[in-house]
Amino acid sequence: MSKEFKFDVICLGRAAVDLYGDQIGSRLEDVSSFSKSLGGSSGNIAFGTARLGLNSSMLTRVGDEHMGRFVREELARVGCDVSHVVTDPKRLTGLVLLSIKDNDSFPLLFYRNDCADMAIDSDDFDLDYIASSKSLLITGTHFSTKQTNATSLKAIEYARAAGTKVILDIDYRPVLWGLTGLGDGETRFVSNESVTEHLMSILPLCDLIVGTEEEIHIAAGSTDTIECLRKIRAISNAEIVVKRGALGCSVFDSAIPDTLDDGFTSYGVQVDVLNVLGAGDAFLSGFLRGWLRDENYEKCCAYANACGALVVSRHNCSPAIPSAIELDNYIARQHSIKRPDLDPELNNLHRMTTRSPAQWDELCILAFDHRKQFYEMARELNADPAQIGYLKQLLVKAAVAGSQSEGFDFQAGVLIDDTYGQDALNQVTGRNWWIGRPVELPSSRPLELEGGRSIGSRLKDWPQEHIVKCLVFFHPDDKIELRLEQERQVVELYKACCASGHELLLEIIPPATMTIDDSTVVLGMQRFYNLGVQPDWWKLPAPTVNAWRDISALIKQRSPHCRGVILLGLDAPLSVLETAFRASADFDICKGFAVGRSIFSAPSKAWFKGDIDDSELIEQVKHNYLRLVNAWRNRKA
Image 1 (tube, rainbow, N blue to C red):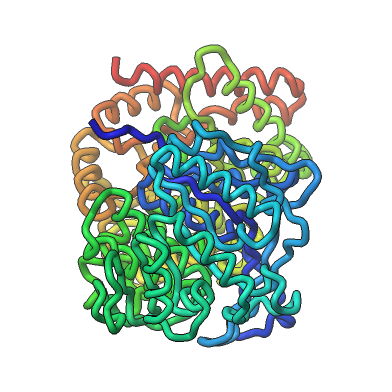
Image 2 (cartoon, one colour):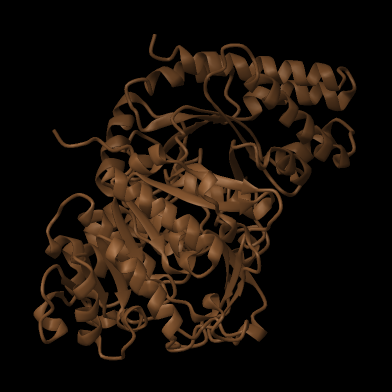
């Protein structure tokens, strides 16, 4: 009977934070803003293999600070085990600054002087942990110092004793071996006899060796690739994978032939290169997807080449690695895709299958993103509109109190604006709540966005966890000029969300002055799908059972990775909403409700008038909120 393993791969080595220059074409000196992502070759591979469906585990150290927590959380977010990501109280997490100057120049600086992952120690793991994995992957940097070398050799010792396969990603960075100036992180090759001698002592211990031609050269001490491969074969029976960039890869599992092409060679496809950084880590993640599942070289190399091709066409490293669904889609169509970065289907799959894995199955959202309504309420009651901001903070407290009530077993959420509710938004951000935030100019028809047309620049200031909510008063029978104007605005917003990485909730409300039937909203949704708009969420007036059937079928056909539909309230009495909830009972695409005025209107008016105090407002809103929560709970009864 074959041994059962907890993990497919344990990745020992660098786990850092990449700060990627946003301005393509700039010198690193001239970059003015950076995007943050998980980095480090081992960290990227742990992340990539987890994203592709393997059971991966990270073995490293991070600092006891914000960046260390970020590394741990990013790995956990894709399902990577972080039980052996050790917190080092004395050292900081490593940082890397990178930029894209042109197709051949990718400046980078390593901030790794005595960083946390280089302090990893053999006390950080034991034999049982290493034995729990099918394989152990170590990257070359962790043989470059006395401390990391000893730790890596101990891990290999445990692996060989346990029958765990040993994988070496040569990952040669001369600067990390002290062979270049600290500012020269870009140089990929410097010959050095000492490094070669050291790597040659490691190769006999490995079952799989992976490297570029230059990395094979440093491993065996020659610039003749075939000669190097034969030197390696003389001391090691490992399978050897040579990464050949645009030419694909070649694999050798026995005697070395006269040319690389005489090995098992997979050529892949040509793509326009934006960024080579991280492509090797993606390549290896793809190769391991097949290799660790005992698939043949054809499939292993197809996965690897496709992963590499996708990442070189994109900005950033770990975020660019594809999901398994996306990868399979690309492989099936790769010969017809000249520019993966411009392919709508591929980009939508990447966006929807790599977003936060949070399970928003049953959402009970208190919506108070209203601006015009609160202002008019305050003026009508002779209250100071400046009080609205404080009122919204009290509504947050009511939502929190409701979510902490006994028996509340749903996902709490809020819809809050930044016009009056910025302080309220700040209170809930970071709570792991569902948070929506509006962008439409209230009551605008045709649709206009707050802050004008430059929505992309506005989203740059938003936390990534905030979901962009846009309400459009839309009817399929709108006059053509009005319809085209609204559609243009929604398409621009969708593109801005794709660029910024924010999820989009599109709320459709047909104007009450027009004829509305069961097909009205469905036809509106269909129109936006036809325009290429793929919202993560829909927010809709409560449909009938017949309309629910059509909505469910449409989403299943056109956007199977859509998060779902949320019901809105339209200031309806709570009893009406309770009835509307029951119509959704048999449709899993309905994920919950986002209701506001039905819950907060009466208490807020009483508060503005001074009839009730803060605590009574919180209690009344909480009571109304929990009444709807209970109606949601009992909708299938």
